[in-house]
Amino acid sequence: MYRLFFIFLFFFSIALSQNTIPKNDFRSPLDIPIILSGTFGELRSNHFHSGIDIKTKQKEGFEVFAIGDGHVSRIKIQHWGFGKALYITHTNGYTSVYAHLKKLAPKLEAYLKKQQYAKERYEIQLYPKAGELVVKKGEVIAYSGNSGSSGGPHLHFEIRDAASKPMNPMLFGIDVKDSHHPTVNGVFAYALSDSAQINSSNKVVQLQLKKGKEKNSYVAAKVFASGEIGLGINSYDRQDLAFNKNGIYQLESFVNGIKNFSYDFKKFSFGESRYINTLIDYSRFKNMKQRVQRCFVTAANKLSIYKDVINRGKVSIEEGKEYTIVLKVKDFKDNTTTITIPVVGKKQKVTQKKKEIVTENLITRNSEHTLRKDDVSVYIPKQTFYEDFYFDLSKDKKGRYKIHNDKVAAHKNFVITFDVSKYTEAERKKMFIASLNSKKKPSYSSTKKKGTKFTTSTKNLGTYFLAKDTIPPKVKPVNFAKDKWISNKKYLKIKVTDDLSSVRSYRGTINGTWVLFEYDAKKGMLTYDFNDITFTEAKHNLKLIVTDNVGNNTTFTSTFYRKN
Image (cartoon, rainbow, N blue to C red; front, top):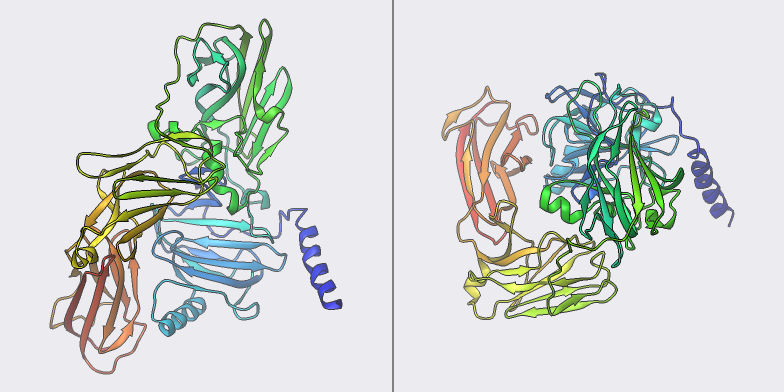
């Protein structure tokens, strides 16, 4: 009983201490000027950015430092995502995260490779004990890189609280030069009820803006509206010394001087991050690549970032009344851009109406559904989508199935099942469920096979069909040739590609001993570090087996000569 009390007291004291954010406890993770290519909370595909992206002068290999005393609590190595990532839990209860690394510092790299060789795998996740890998503030822990899904060399950096919620690192004293005011690309008005209209339309209406009298202000042309309406804004921010279009920090809305809506990016939880698809106008993003941030909260929206919200941010416009709506867009340095919108309550005939395609399949958000079309069925659990809509399940002339369209966001996975009984067992072995990607090319969708049923679980609506892959992966040596000496090489490099279902796994040995090939999935490059293992003989037999997602495999063998 006493033990439970002290455990409770320990975590309570950490939580209490984190009510006051320490601004002087931590140092910078890099010794170069902090210039950002990505801000905290920035709008990304289906998630909020959980840290800041620090530019590294388009280079890899900068020293990365522990921002405070603590211990390494997690090491995660993956082909995509964060790539090589390091987590440090600090003595004050916060955890810092360093991602897209090139490599870890020597003692940490040795620990990592020992585990990779023991488990004979590159992708790995480790959780060292508290006293196992202790680090000090300012100690070099890694080197910056471009691993995982990174689009260029940079350091992704996070600070998480004791509940593993990401927090804005700028709150902890990390300073970034920023004298720029947020840029506004457009302001939009939404009719939110059946009887509502804006300038004779119940479609989304883009408002006309002109510069205001005050600096960094805009005034919209007078809006005539009735019923319940909402606003949205397309905006970004720039910091000094960079041209990147980064995310804003805070958005506020006022109606006749009274705040009715606001949010800021101080903290959020990973569990709510996908609700970004309710914050933005998702269909407009898919159609026009514009992330319009709604200044109102939809019914399915469960984000915790909102404050001072009245009537979910919606504005009820009454006949004959006048309203002044003001939007304020801010960055972390409190640089503010203001938009003033005059609204007159006036009922007008709707001349521009929304078009709704009606099908036999009405998806209601709070019910589960199973839809069928020929050889395909789609199972949709409750609350998969954010609102009710008519679902299109159809088949085109090429035999591909249209599982609605990608203009609608899904919050949960739904399941697509193909009946493959008309194919032979031999044919099924080489088949998989594919979707059309953004380039209209077939893309492998993780396929489970059981008897005559193929299933895939996904959050992506679009076109799905059965594809066949009979071609094994290609393997090509990059920096060596058969039966040649390569004693001057530090690394062994091999290019691997697959034409359709993509590479699933690989296994390499030298002289029968498993060796660690690091895989850069973006480049399709396998790299072995000759410092990993000391071989006594000069002649080396290399064997590499590469397998794709339907089981086609290529065995590559070669002989080379090298002395350690």
